[in-house]
Amino acid sequence: EYDTDGVIPVIKIASIVNGNLFPIEERVTIDFFHSSESAQIKVGDILLASTGEGSIGKIAKYDSGERALADNHISIIRIDEHEANPDFILFFLRSNAGLLQIEQAISGSTGQTELYPRDLGKILIPRSF
Image 1 (cartoon, helix red, strand yellow):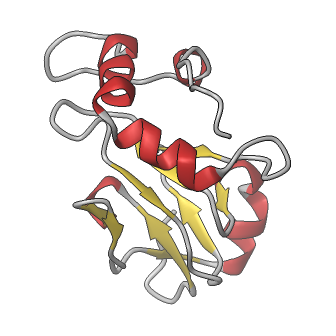
Image 2: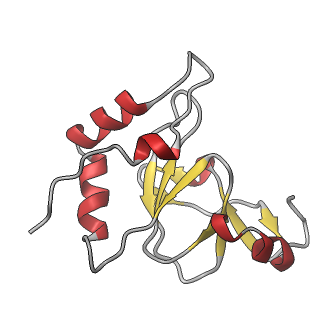
């Protein structure tokens, strides 16, 4: 529910360009933000485009302290920093080994491709030391 008077930015696939996040004009109200807890983005979250051929696998890290919301085409990967290093995970997912696993996890046919959370959970990440 985009709102021209909204104050919370929405991160969409088009926001991820060459591994960086760029703001777009879509915004939602603070009430909508609070009602969409699972889509709320936090500092350090890894954002992965999870829908659409040519877009799946675009990835960036959210470093802004500004509150933001992910649209339904972005998967939020939240890393417990006590368990793993988020920067290592981001680096790995951008590597050939990470991208290959992402590509293998994609479901659907041409033009209707999707990367589901259950499949993201199957990606094997080496331990960082």
